Image 1 (cartoon, rainbow, N blue to C red):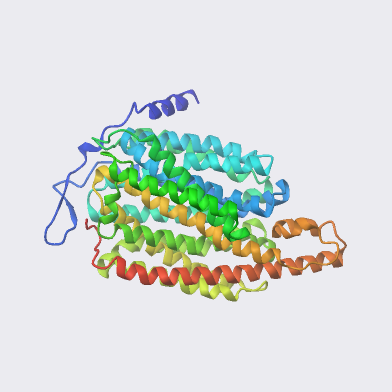
Image 2 (cartoon, rainbow, N blue to C red):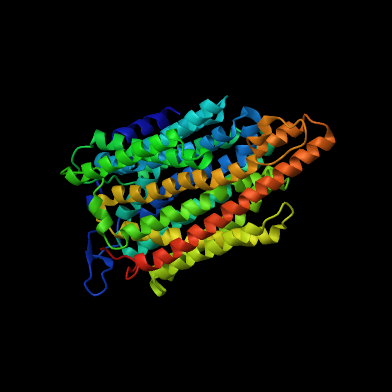
Length: 534
C-alpha cells in the first residue's frame, strides 16, 4: 500500500515519464493527405500503454451504466423527488461538460499522463463518497465532484492515443479499441452491477471503481509516456470560469424549461449561460494563447464530427437513462437479468467499433457515420411500439441496432477529430469531442428525460395514492407496498402505462433527432477521408 501511494504521488508530481517529443514524426503525403510515419512505427510498448488508457475508459463507462441500474434502489432508499432524481442522473454530465475543455487544455500544459493519473486517483476516492451518500443532496454533490475528476480522464486518453499512434492506420485501430472498451464498459457495468445489487446494497456498484483505479495508476506510471504542448502559454482562469458557468447555466436552463416551462428561473439561467459562453468565445479569440483555439472549428470535418456527436448522444441518452427502469420496474426483471438484457447494444458497438476504421477507408467517412446514425434512428423508431409485455427478441434486436450504429458513428467521428489537429493540440481537440458527448448526454437527459417525467406525472391513480408516487416510477412502486392489494395493483398499472407512454414520446423524438443528424453528417463530412488533416 505504501509503495502504491508513493507511486501515485510521483505520478501527480510528474516525476516519471518522458516527453512525447521522441515519438515518430509524421508527414503528410500530398497524394492522399493521409498521415504516414517517417521510418518507424511509433513508441515501443504503445499497445500496452493503450491497455492502460482502456482501463480509464472502462472506469468512466462502468460508472455511467451502473448508475442507471442502481437508480430504482437509490430512489427507494434515499427518497429523492423526481427533480432530484434527474439531478442525480445528469449533474455528473453537467459538471464534466463544463470542465472538459479546461481540463483538456490543462493536460496540454502540465502533462497528459500527470493529469490522467491524478484524475484517476481522485475518481476512485470520490467513488467511495458516492457509495456512502446518505441523502439526495449528498448524492448530487458526490456526483458533481465525480464529474470534476472525470473531466480529467477522457480528454487525456484520446490525446495520449494521438501521440502514441502517429500512423493513421494504427491510430484508427487504436481509436476503435478505445471505443470498443467504452462499449464493453457499458456491458460490464450492468452485469457486474446487477450481481452486486442482488447481494449487496446499491452503494457497492460505485466501489467497483476502486480496484480499477488502483491497477490503472500502478501500471500507468510505468507504461504511459508523458506528453504536453511544448509552448502552451498560461492557463487562463477567467476562461475556465466562463466555460464552466456558461455550460452549466445553459444546460440547467434547458432542463428547467423542459420540466416547468419557460419561467423566470429558466430564462435567467439561459441568459447567464449564453452570455458566459459568448464571453468565453470572445476571450479565446483575443488571447495570444487561448484555452481553446477556436480556429479548430475551421478545420475540415472537425466541426461536423463534433456536432454529429452532440446530437447523436442527445437523441439517445434520455432513452438510455430510463431503459433500466423499464426493464426492472415495468417488466419486473431482476438487476442481473436487466444488465444482461442490455448486452446486445454493447456487443454491437464493440464489433462495429473495431470494424469502423476499415469500413471508412473502404467506403467513406460520411457514408459510415451517416449510415450508423440512420441505423440508430430506425431502432429508436421501433422502440416507440414498446409495451409492458414486449418480448425480449424485439427489444434485444433494437438494442443491437443501436449498438452497431453507435459503434460505427462514434469511432469514426473520434478519429476524424483527432486526425484533424496537430499533436500539440490533441488535448484541447479531445476535450471538445468529449464536451460534445457529455453536453449531449446532459441535454438528452434534460429534454427527453423531462418528456418521460412530465408524461409520467400525469397518470391518475386510485383513491389514496400518495403525491410522492407521481415523482418517479420507483416512488410509485414503493408507495404500492403500503396500500391494499387491489389499490396497489391499480396504482402500478396506471404508473407503468404512463411511464411506457413517456418512453414512446422520448424514443420518437430521439429518432427524429438521429435522422436529422444523419442527413447533416452526410453534407458536413463530405470529402473527408480517414487520417486526413484539414
